[in-house]
Amino acid sequence: MPTRKEEMEAWALDDYKEVLGRTIHVLEFTGYIDNDSVDFSLEEPVEARVTKTPETDILHWNRPWLDPYWNLEILKIPPAMMEAHPKLGMMTSTYMFGDSYSLDGKYQPARYDPRYDPREWSPRGEVWKRKRE
Image (cartoon, rainbow, N blue to C red; front, side, top):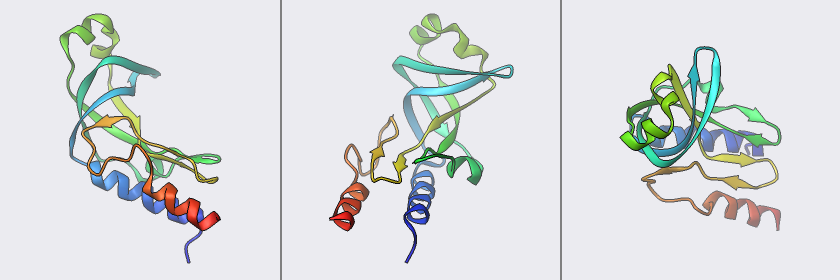
């Protein structure tokens, strides 16, 4: 039987495979400008594609959370967002957080649309709850 950590890592890899190559709309992501990371939280979403991401980034632990990173290719930035956030045009690489899971059973869904099989609540969290009861 897999440990909770192994189970969570399998979920993170499955989540990534679900979005790899898909075009999604993202409000929150991080971009690099030179050697500095810049967090963006926008009023309108950018159109992005999830690209190949190293497994070590997908299985990124920030105890007690598994906080996966997904690499992004920004495809389209709304003109109003370029005006409001001029640094968007200076990014050299971008990523976002995927669905995050904690060792104590908490869940934080990734913030993107459209989601297949939406997880505003976590079916996995429900399984964890039943295992702990």
